[in-house]
Image (cartoon, rainbow, N blue to C red; front, side, top):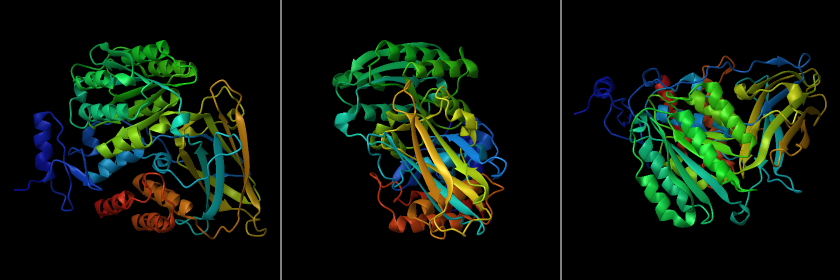
Length: 505
């Protein structure tokens, strides 16, 4: 016998626990899991209002008059958490909190078909201009950035500290058990000479495993398997111990990194945001980065995790399934290694060509223009083989269309090969070319952007619809080049857009 979602929500709440669930087309609860692309996704019945998850609110970037401010500057963002969190919500039958929708993370979840760097550079940049699908009088400008890919032989040795939240709030199938699977999987793909330590935190902190070479994998895996959840959350103290352990075993020229798995609930001890941010920033300056992986729903502190990863020269991912675990910890594990540090983009528009412009997404990554040349200003990192994509919506100026292939903007990018180095400057002109055509890269990016704006209820969505977003993504897939693991060619995104349209009906 099937029961209503309301019935099962009451059951879950009265039991004081989270249950895994699915939302079939009729909206009723009839399974303990969701299914996407043949894999099982963990979930539980609850709207964003019920979960208690926390996000930083922000407003969409506005249009800016080029005559008033011709220069736009932003930091790169290599996170992917927002997309995975959206996927989990849509598959559970409801929209995500609009503050959780960061369009730049939707874009950068995917690897785009961009050329690799050459001439000894760690980064390559590209750009194009095409029509704006949701406003026929506007255009879109796409900026592309790609970090250098590295062969296995060139990957430096790793000094990882697994920082594991074992507090009581992690006692759920979609939290600690999934996190343990993630770490066990990662061990199988590391160099035998890499090193791993394990620090846990709950009511207190504990070093479960001293820094150990991966050649002793059985010892490392045994320590991971024995982890269990209990107590409250001394997150700040756990971070401090993990950083100290990473510093104690620092590898010159290596990938020194804390990999933190948590639901982000810091509620005991050194928990003030300022103290934790200062801790992450101080160790980042010493060459120890952080990757934060969020798990579960119910008290997910997305705002804290994103901010800490930003300050700690790291990335923030959300793990909603074993498939996402494989993506982050296996297929794209090279991204744990930063090949470009403090990456900043700056665009200088020609006022005769561009009347006004709007950066789509990157709201919490916008920088002061004078900070572009200031190498002391922190910005985002790019992992090995990673692509970064940004879109500007453009209102044409008086000279648009009068001169073919006219440069409408200058695209500059700065990055450091290593922290402490002088930044490297890359420069490129953005031309109108044939602005009536849309490449597969631009079609895919604009479809994602349209979808994100709809989820955010953006005032700038124009005539965007779920059907438009679907068509743009689908059209790009017909001609697009395959990325290494074909995430862009899978139909998952199409099904998510289709499901969102049905939820909206």
